[in-house]
Image (cartoon, rainbow, N blue to C red; front, side):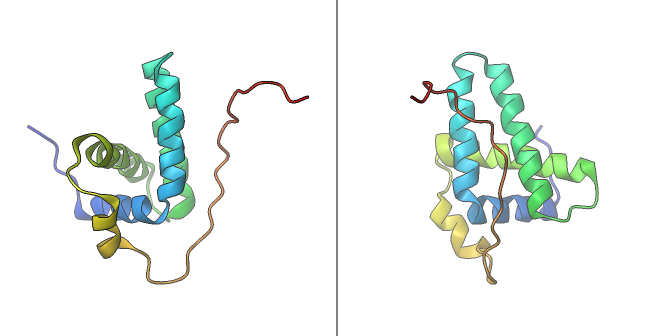
Length: 117
């Protein structure tokens, strides 16, 4: 049987996905590139970056809840990108922040590219 998550975990994860879609999508795309070489390393990278995003964007009281939110973000991204259960537009109608947008900077590892000349 599947695991039941608290409503707060679900709503926080959906709000983060809607309001920080560009950052989340960039993390996802980088991990997809990494998964060609090492899928386990890619999933660890994805989870660690989402944990960092949750920590920067929310004031979650415990580490356990932060980890559960990060894991649920991964589950939602799979549902959005692969299964097509719903779209980001459907989520944004309900979970968009009403107040001003907050700017968040996450230190993503640099992509390995050709040396600059």
